[in-house]
Image (cartoon, rainbow, N blue to C red; front, side):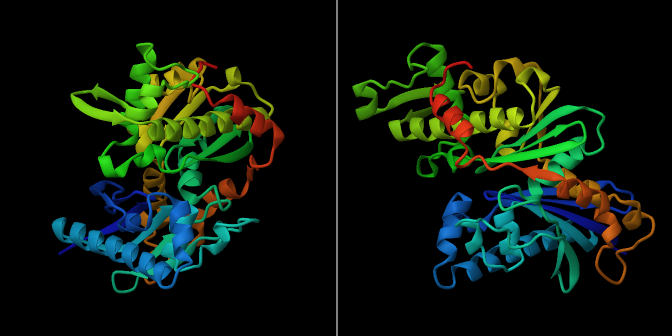
Length: 377
């Protein structure tokens, strides 16, 4: 007889992560795979733009649904389990595609979110999967559920979560208040140069290495030779080739992250020294060297000893929702969709988040311009 299982799914711009949970709340299987939509671009902006062309959005939808369904079937067979329901967490663009909704509104002002409530789709011959909602076009469910899991019920007063990927989402808790901002990182962190196989973590380490050796100025005044020929660097036994284009893409991404973080802290009426804990979430954040992040000025050196790498909090957040007593004990999933009570506390949390508009804000723009060098700040 097959055991009953519940699926937690995180759909990122680059990768998809899946967990199966049994009736005791234990994880019985985990897996990760490449998001097949990468053929439409490595960042959400590319996919939003290409979705406007004929049949592209339909192809993106079919790709991700087939990918998720196939992985669920594979894990079910390998673990002799029957998946009865699940929860899907994703950024706003990915979630909207999964819901088969137009994402045109995400690419132009006023950047309206295609959905604002938890919605159910059917997979695996009619099994209900709840696609949880975020709080805005730029602060998706992946960031909201991550922050909720980390400090939704915490007594900590001033904490920040940074979810680093193609879109850097940040949420700050100040006592009972919640603030959020997003930073446009582009593909620089997830995969800065796909063609040559140089990934974001290695790129950061290579640039930090050159800065520490004094071979690259913190002001990024590149020599004529560097501009014309680039620079070979060996990191952990891997030789990579840095170019001006790579340096500039990381420069812009680092500036966006740092300026957004400081803007968020100041907008909440706080100073850097007031922050008790800085959580770094997301796949890129998990592999990134915190020392390199400080060297490049992505995070203030004063926060280094208060920084915690928290991994894929979008996935762990979905897992926690599935451990609700209404599911495990009351078996409320039988015969239909998951009840609203499962999401009650999470919904209260996400709806209380105040999203800050950095674009067009003079204070943010000044911060951004000042953050264009790798000077320690």
